[in-house]
Image 1 (cartoon, rainbow, N blue to C red):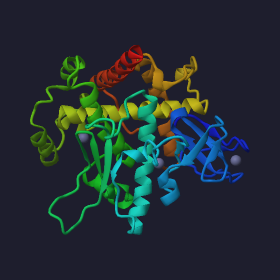
Image 2 (cartoon, helix red, strand yellow):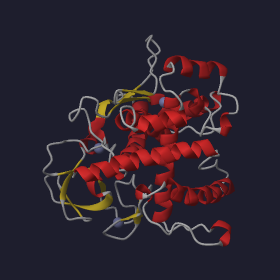
Image 3 (cartoon, rainbow, N blue to C red):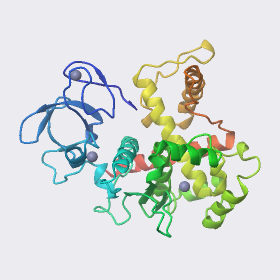
Image 4 (cartoon, helix red, strand yellow):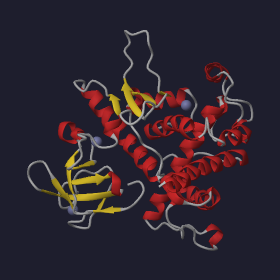
Length: 356
Ligand SMILES: [Zn+2]
Ligand SMILES: [Zn+2]
Ligand SMILES: [Zn+2]
C-alpha cells in the first residue's frame, strides 16, 4: 500500500490501497477519498453499501460496476457517477481491445495514487466542470496509420498519457533507449501533474522570482530545448545540479522532475511511517519519530529521514535481486529545488487555510 496502513474492519487483515476484496474474509473493499481510508463494505441492496470505517453510505464508482477498474467510492447523495479520480477522465482507450483494458487498469492505478497524493497535499484537484483549466486526463494509443504521434505530456490542465507506457515491454524498451535509470507509469503521472501545478502555483505568483533563481529562465524556447536534449543528450555535468538527466533539458522539465521526486519522497516516507519503519542514522537516534510526511514543516526534516531510508531500502531491493527503489543521487542544487517545491506547496496550503 502506499501511504497509510489499512486493515479490513471485518477480520483485521492488512489490505492494500489497490484491493477491492479482502483476501482473508472475501468482503468487498473500497476507498473513501474524502476520508483517506480503505473500508470494508456491507451491502445494503440497491447497489449501496455501508462503509465500516465511518458508517456512511456509498455507491461504487461507475468504473467499478462497468469494468472493475476502480475501487473508490462515491457518497450515495452525490450527483456524480464517477469517483474523484475517474471523474477527471476525458478520453480512455477503446476497451473492446483486450490489451487496452489491461493497460487502462494499470494507468488508472497509477492515477489514483497520484490523486491520493494531491489530495493529501491539500492541493486543488478540480476538474473541467469546476474551472476551464481544471485537471483532466486522456489516455491515447498511437495509431500507425495516423500522422499525429501520441506523446505523453501536459497542456492547460489536460494530461495526455501514451497507453504504451502501461505496456511493460514497451516502457522498458523506451527506458533503455533513452538511457534512463527509472521509468514508471506512476512517475509519468507525477511528472505531468508537476507541469500543471507549476501553472497553478508558480507562474503568476511571487514564487516565480525564486523559481528563476533556482531553475533558470523558463522563457527559453521550450520545444527547441527539449528537441536539443533528444539529439545531443543531457547537459554536461548535469549530475552536479539536477535530479535527473532529463531535468537539464529545460527549467519546466527540471521543475516537473523535482515535483515528481518530491511526491515520491513524501509518499514513500508516509508508507514507511505507516509500517513503523525506523532507521537509525549511525545508530544514534531513531528517525521517523515525526508523523505525516505530507504535513512536514520543512523539507530538511524529511530529507534527514529520506536519505537513510533510501540507503536501507535500496540495499534490501538489491538483496531481492531488484533494482533500487530510488536510483538517484541528490546534489546540493537539486536539494535546494526540492526545498522550493516543498515551500510552494506549503505556502499554498497555508494561504488556503487562512481563506477559510
Ligand atoms: Zn477481511
Ligand atoms: Zn473511480
Ligand atoms: Zn515534462
